Length: 53
Image 1 (spheres, one colour):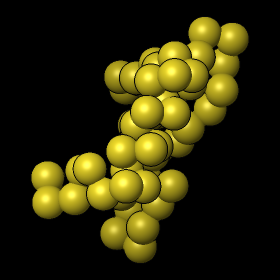
Image 2 (cartoon, rainbow, N blue to C red):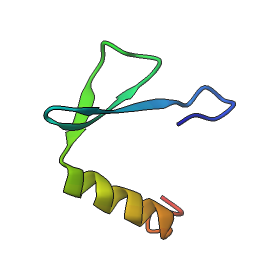
Image 3 (spheres, rainbow, N blue to C red):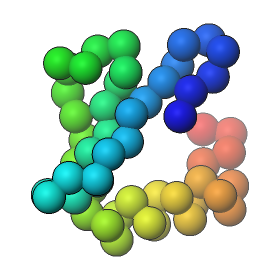
């Protein structure tokens, strides 16, 4: 996921769940979500739950 301003994240499925990190800082912190958590996040993003944040 990225935009023309270089604000990018990388998302990958791992044996532990769904991993998300900042592509500009690959050695930095990572977030790890269960399938259910990531599905809930995607649903919220698609439905506009985070608009205006």
